[in-house]
Picture (cartoon, rainbow, N blue to C red):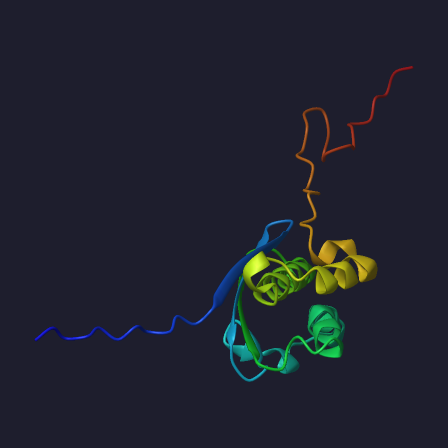
Length: 149
């Protein structure tokens, strides 16, 4: 007598990352109740308010397009400063939602176009980095003062 193996239904989970300066955010998007958590805390208790508003931008756009009702987003962020982390968070969330809502074809074109129309940095990492200090000066561009000439 052969025992039948039950097929487990695999839940769709999308992992995406976003970067800004030295901050790295990793977002996990899965089926849920519409909760968004940053480092195990609800996004709505994030301070300062400006940072919270900026981090919520991709969530609000997705909500307006009815793409967030049954989705939980968990973001782990490390490195960088406060605003660098916020930019990394919003990039990771936006990328995760675009790929999660895409279905079999991979990406949700409608949501992607709306994000690009709003702000390109929602989907594209900012490549700018701090310029290194060079010799003959106190910083990247400043030079020691000369007394001759």
